Amino acid sequence: MLKVYNSLGRELQEFKPLHEGFVGVYVCGPTVYGHSHLGHAKSYISFDVVVRYLRHRFPDCRVRYVQNITDVGHLLEDVGEDRVLKKARETGLQPMEVVEEFTRSYFEDMDALNVQRPDISPRASGHVPEQIKLVRTLLDRGHAYEVDGSVYFDVSSFPEYGRLSGRSAQDVTEAVRVEEREEKRRPADFAIWKRAEPAHIMRWSSPWGEGFPGWHAECSAMSMKYLGETVDIHGGGLDNIFPHHEDEVAQSEAATGRPFARYWLHNGMVTVNGQKMSKSLGNYITIKDAFSGDSPLGKPVRPMVLRYFILTSHYRSPMDISVEALDAAEKGLERIETTVARVRRMTGGAGQGDVPDEVAALVEDTRTKFLAEMDNDFNTAGALGVLSTFTREANRLLDEQPDMPQAALQAMDALYDELGGQVLGIVTAETAQGASAGIEAGLIEAMLDVREELRKAKQFELADRIRDRLGELGVEVKDGPDGAAWQWK
Image (cartoon, rainbow, N blue to C red):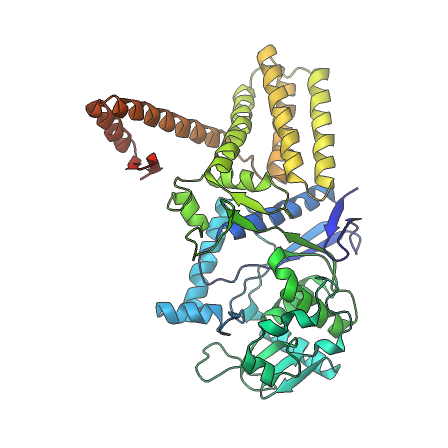
């Protein structure tokens, strides 16, 4: 029985799809005005595994995964400026140039992390008619009011406001800008349609004049278009619970009279060396910078190592990134990769044979324990522990039985593909190559250790020869106060 922690109610609940044979999942996607960062990696890898496991757990269900692209309407709270427009102004680009560049960048990063593409990736700018329809419905039902071309949701008309987050309308009073307070009836009321000022490039015609949709209205309209008025699972970051998700609930349920989402899942935030990731602190890390090594982490991070590392923590837990933690994750992944490569090298020999009882029991016990961990609110950390135990036992059996029957090897490989591949996404057709990459990295580190010893012994000519030889092989070595670092050229 699959149990999930529902933020709506703050408890573990058995997951049951609303409609037989169908599961609808909506996750708030990125606002595309910059390269994706490690917080995005945490969120979208986490929900990738949620969707993968739902498909594995309910093979007879059609799981439709919708993740939007926010390309308009997401305003900076401090100045009220659209994030995409701000980037366009700073770079001299058209807003849609910004959107195209960073949408491509986002999917490049997700592909590298083996995050499966959503079934539908709707853009907010492509669904303005649906958002206008939602606004009109709310006006007709007395849940919204128009002021000089802007339309606001009347929070006082929805008594259950705050049910999801546990916060009240009063919590937003101090965060609202003065000019918005003067225009709105109450500080907590939020915009579902905004009038476009003369300099605002992204604008659409509406019954209330030219304007653009409110950020909160976008997700409600797109979710209901593709998944119906009630979605099974709605997910996003912990920082989205209030006000974004709270506002989604209010406007959606006020418009339809039905529950908007049955299960709310929220992933924890990311810190770097114990501090909140922030540009002002100098520890803001984009996914691309993590891959290249041009980040406070100081060295390149292999995409699958980053994926493995994220899965070592529960999706609801905060995640602290450090060099030491990533090194530990790399070793854990390499143990699995090396074993998968070993099994695959041995598979394909002559003779099928039977699966020994010991191997059959190990495979079945591993699957049972793995599913039990995943059934407990998608506990990937526990599931990885089960897979690591299987890896250790598999190596023991392969050491003891070098002539392992082909059927047994195929059973091991199939289990890795099922649990490590289909569900966790860390075992792929290229896993053997990943193991080689890990071995190469280890050899480079070993050579740098030898070079450091030579430098300490003042044998600088030999140390330089190691550096130069590594350079010829495509490895750039940089000496610093904390020792040598390397990256691929």
